[in-house]
Length: 327
Image (tube, rainbow, N blue to C red; front, side):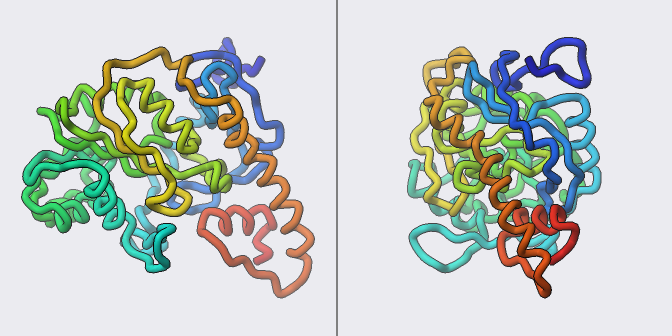
């Protein structure tokens, strides 16, 4: 039994509450990376819930303290000077801002009215809202965030109607589309948030979620402030358990990311009955072993100078830290 370092009882799955967690033995030794791509010390506990299949960084008081510290010094899109990164899909080799691609694909996936209300949860400096405004003008655009830091940027977006600081329960009215772009992986109680989204969504509305695909990209298991780790099947099962009908769950819109489109369903189900195949959960969880293999291959190469790293920001930041800055 895994015991929480912050409590007298066992550590529990933050998806279903079960105490039946399988732990990755080597994970605590890995150095980590913040979601804004800064080196972060080793620590944390990677686990797989044997009851619901959720792959997760175990949420403890210490994890929450670390996440709070990361967000207190967070720099959005630091490597791009505040500009959203350009992404690539599987259908062509031309990069474009991620939100532009997502809005265009979402528009092809679901029927959207000419005018409506969009709520972007965790809207940041407005990348997704800006893309929506360009692609689908005439909508009223709302966002939620933990602070008003980026309000001046948001107020320059045509159609921007308001920012709510704090809890989703403070948001007035209902919406035709609710979006969570790289938000859900940070949330310690994802089903509770999705249920609140369902309450705020019009009966014929659509929920859109974008998260990293940790089966395709196990490096994302190393992000210190992420607490849930998904594949398309794992995310689809979670969304269904929250009372949605999943219309699309794919990793084809953006490389190494998952896009889910869902509509309100008949109602939530028990979280410990997510219905995700065990093999899928085990495959995502096994990413920690792949990381060990990568590190073992890179370590002897680092002794040969000059030594460089070419790759994605999270991966290269992690490997450089593990190799004591040899790059």
